[in-house]
Length: 113
Image 1 (cartoon, one colour):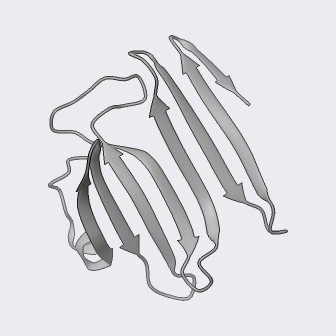
Image 2 (cartoon, rainbow, N blue to C red):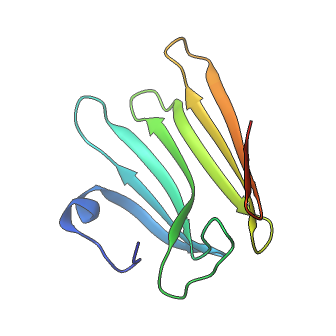
């Protein structure tokens, strides 16, 4: 995603945009019956640890239900080396409990837990 690319729909739902040490943080809020708040961090590192000067990738996000501020899903990626990364995923089930998963990329091997 080019960070300076801001279509009208994004601009309309953008609540906050700030620079953070490793990139940019954006908070978006959708409207309607099932409104959600999305808190995302964008970084110039992809999942392989490659850095791009003008391209940004989602490195973390959290999606909240706007009505009751409960966490619906979350993803956090940490690049640990030039070809290594760890991605943690959390998603809320209909019964209110959370499913957790982890994706570990080590060179060309991808392991899912």
